[in-house]
Image 1 (tube, one colour):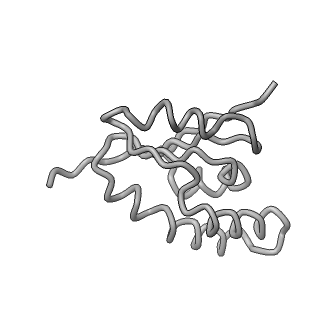
Image 2 (tube, one colour):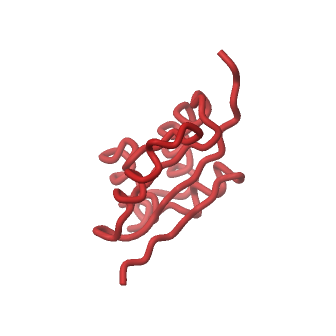
Length: 109
């Protein structure tokens, strides 16, 4: 097994703005490990609690790391992508945990 250091890419936005469409366009790319709303129920709960101030940033970082790190770390593709409106609530946390990550913010007109 060859080790590939995946770079996280998060496609974020509000609901019904096209994150799923972007995922569908990119999932066939051989260099991208594409996910749509990765571990959605768990991430949504964490992000909701954090955005409401009911979860401190350090605890949020711990929980988000537990959910994303293995998937990103063990990916065999050069880009690990999560296309999710849930991730938009925790961009600050994700950027601190994964400093090489990139974000694309989709805005629906």
